[in-house]
Image (cartoon, rainbow, N blue to C red; front, side, top):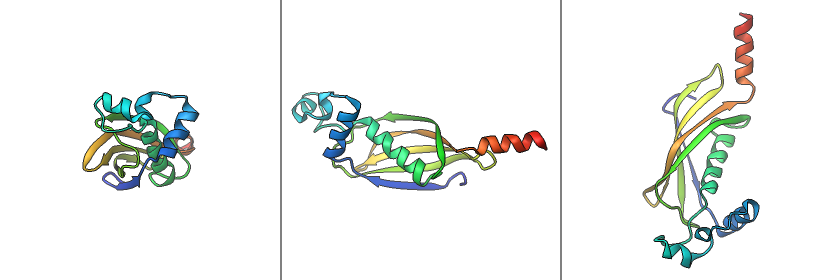
Length: 141
């Protein structure tokens, strides 16, 4: 991976995804399951759990960028606008920094839906074991 490399992941969060997350997390905030409540709070419909957007970052990191064997070092997302259930969305990732010797990558992230930025931020990941291998080779050279 090189700085400037990009990847894009298209996704939708379904009502079933929302119900499963609610059950697993115990988060019963009505903003995420009661449309009337959400509208009273100024939203056009039920709002997707932010953690389900973060799950898409996990999908990208673990499958393609950097891919299988990576571990998260950090993630930070700033939510700008709501994502609604079943709305098409895309996660855009751009490599901001990469160190092949240590298997380390820093990504700039942006989530969009309907031409609106939903969230933006950064993630750092490392290929599992790479830093230990690099440190060991430095120590013996």
